[in-house]
Length: 121
Ligand SMILES: [Mg+2]
Picture 1 (spheres, rainbow, N blue to C red):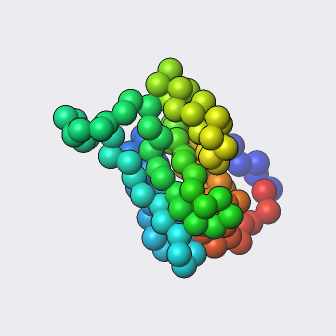
Picture 2: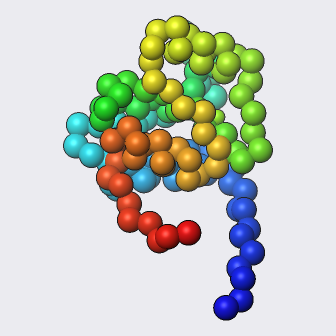
Picture 3: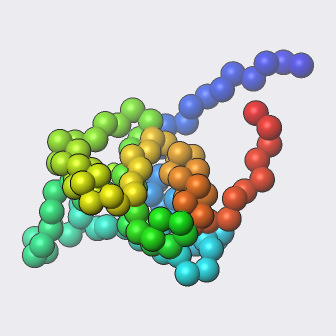
């Protein structure tokens, strides 16, 4: 059998965000919520705070959690690290994820979406 070379498809963060929210819309568990924090495009809105993570997640076994989405090669900004420190200080669950699959694994782990059957690697 011909060995398949794994090709990492690089996705932009907005594409990752839509994929993750769409995934929750299709297999999200009852009583859960995954919503974007529209910091990036909400310019001028009172109360904006740099570094807020991309997604707020409610339900499952976390109650409330936050997910920061990154591309495969992205890195958190200083403001995002400062926000992460606030989450740690307050004992609020969070994840900084890379690519499209990692945030979906986190949502499964947090029991926000139904676990998908996966082919063995
Ligand atoms: Mg992000």
